[in-house]
Image (cartoon, rainbow, N blue to C red; front, top):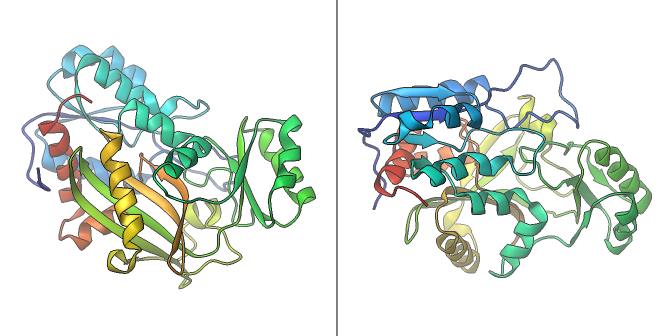
Length: 333
């Protein structure tokens, strides 16, 4: 198939947990993946525009309780975030697949793999996609592994996204600082990953399409307050969520290493049902290093993915319609 921005004839079910307004956020705020008001209202408008009817639930349990009424509908799974479970990203696709219901988003296998940063890095290494040297920390007994890294280092939760647990000031410059950061984070997050800091431009490889047919592939570079090369900085929760920084994007697909593009396309193709994905990393000169795979990519109207679709002449509403049509044409996993 090709990108199809036309409306679908099926009703759509949106499962979405909304972000609670915060007076301030910190390293332990764990609902940053939930939909902001801006994201929710943009997505709701698009779905109501591109489908005959929209039903909104706040949890997978609510969908499961009403599953018999949605056999012919399309379930939009990618925006429900959940909290406090490493398995949370698999709930919705598993429910939909077990009932044979069409859905937008990656299947349970892909979601589980991408949610585990350490496992995703190992998986990508089989495709020749490099990443920073790192160690996985399961508790106090594993902190000695931090001696195996060259500093500076970034310590972060292994099973969180949206910069949860990652501060703008989260770079540590010595073993003792890393141990202190790890102990702080382990008080909230059971598994951590510590990685050697990557210099370079912050980039996202944005991909959408179905098995055997990638419809949209663009590489997007991030600029924060005019900075597009990071050598001592992190894009943490403060910059990402507090809306105090100016964010700009630039398409750099034609300038991106062709071998990495080929590897990324192969990875996506062989995953199976994904629908959309970001491959996030740092680009230093011509060397790309993976940070994480994001199978539940942000759908904020100014996100990487929306910018990539806009570059291809498609509005935000059109992007959502394209995703609905992928699910409409290919039911199941």
